[in-house]
Length: 327
Image 1 (cartoon, rainbow, N blue to C red):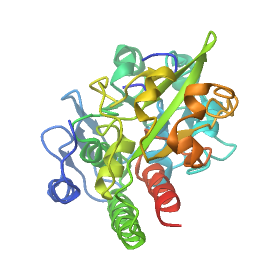
Image 2: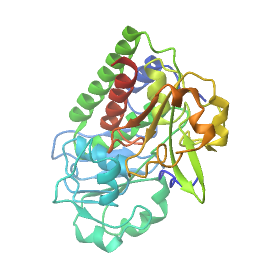
Image 3: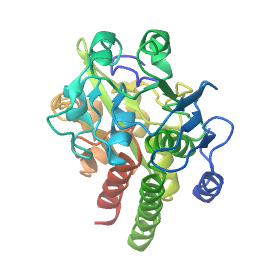
């Protein structure tokens, strides 16, 4: 499920419930089996397909950034990825890749020839790439993950991680990665509680210039960012409609007038350096009259932190929540 382009336009369960469910293992989607490093491994992927390998995959191609991050954070450097330059811009600060990784084309149109030429053991993709499965499976097995679930993005992330880890023979590494994420959630929540600032809501957004206007995309409570905020006891200020998959809303500077007198913290992603929430809104009377703007409560997420990623990206987002609320 590819994150919508910036020009395209249900609150999660409490963390304890999410983690309890995750601790029980994968459900019907994501059921897995595997043994030693040389034993066969298999999972049931998000599409309900059984993916079987004679041995854990060592040479992996990943076609979406979250899956690239997960594969790498499990200790396996992908042999090929889609849109390497974009990954380096939006994700690379959290989980960098070395120069050995080949670029196999764009996320929407990867090169089948390039993938086949890498001699991979496994290709990992999300549901938006489904049309490519038959062509790729002529050369290499394919695993399909979910990528996002507005109802439970933390549980979904755990399921995607477990599927990938099983086929890579990296279940111990996945357990350690998830334990680190759980610890980060607990530590962040404790830091915010100790600071006594958690009652102030936040609004997280990115945006783009559309003609002479600034389009703003808020992250709702069901987005991965929103799920992380809820997990550490924060309140998401965006209560408008979302897209049903990624937890993303849509508005503009005029729409932000609803927050004119609202005390809150505004966090934005500016990894591509377009400066939407500085240069793009400069001189706009509505923007400059917003209480959080006048109070200097506008924050920029560190570049290279992917808001739709895996546990490593999620930990970086939690670190920034702690910086904004508890430093």
